[in-house]
Length: 312
Length: 293
Image (cartoon, rainbow over all chains, first blue to last red; front, side, top):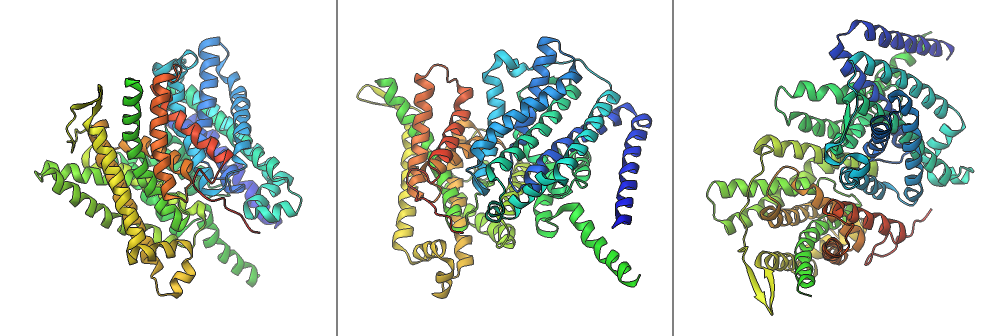
């Protein structure tokens, strides 16, 4: 067990070092793409806390990203607040909205929750258009343009902090309560887990992560408008979480890489090809490896490791 | 008064479209507790098939029935190939699978027929007729008639045919149904086929109005969700009532409540959805579900 912990530590240090080195060696365009992967990681970690660890499906985390993105755009674009300073504010505002949404969501389960969260994701662009006094309507709000390196650094520093926070939340009492809720609500309540509290909390935390990601998206794109946060964004996040593996923090990076780069490569076939491949893959993954890349790796590696242990 | 009547009739027309798709959702939900997020995209796909047939010179009404037939086969095939393997999977898994289907079909529609917006012929003349000084669009009246006729046929089917009875039995109690020799798996596939037909119907009715593009049914699907939940996800009659109510209500709100601009039409439907889910999750005509531990 100790040895496994050491290997994990080395792997984390290696991954972190790789991220830093890439930040100084890649071209600016690749760093821009890397920055996008960084904020996808943050958003998917957030979604994973809610869906993978607490068992509450959300098709609406793109809406929480929109809350974060518009918080940053309005504060930085209209009120002259420093962009980076808006990131924690975006987290708080989105987290608060998430908590608020968590309260009604308590009464919903399974398909009903999927419906309600989907509804929110669909509503966001129309709401942004309607309240154009704040959001700039269809033309949106423009922000300063930055280099790829700027986005890359901001994204991955936030992603690092996000990972740390997620790990701290999930390793202790709260994480155990989340998993208990996911595995059996009845059993969780019987063991004294406050269902209302932890479900709402999971929504709040998940939304705060989404808020940070949305804020970085706005900073990276240099603008926000109603089409910056389409319904598909929420679906892509879910796809990223499923590909990486629901209930695993490690797989998230693969999920994020997948949703950023698949469209770029598949576009050579046809502009619509990424969607078709996404859809097929999503179904195939649920069929073949419902626990995602990490689950697959575990299934392949675990028997080998056990055999080694038996012989030793 | 004139304006009120006109708005009610055109609300009933869009309500008829929502009701058809809502009914499709309810048919599937009743038998398997799966909400088919791909219902709208399936409808769009079949509508494109209809457009293709018309484009090849097939007359409108021949296309209409050919498309319904195709939609049935399409629905059955999807259930057999895509949904069947997840028979015993948790709800979350099946939801994700139908979302995969949504994304895939949406991409496929755009791939085959491009994202370019296409005009679609209407079965009914677009000119208005005058009834007591109020002008109604013939198209609206036609849509209402088609929707009600479809619901009536469906009711006849479920009420008076042996297959209909078997399908109801399979939905209410699969185990007992199986013991009496009903092939429950095929009944589910049949349900998907019928749902797909209803979806095609809603697509054929709305396409002349909003024009055909790959995302045509996405908002209709949301209204259908709201309609199905309002009426009670378990209740076919509820879906129809819910659809018509939503159609009329949104039209009247848009006409008489000033701050509600066209942009708020969709969020209003979502508000209805959320309120119903919170206040009376079983809907207007559904029965309350008691969860046993």
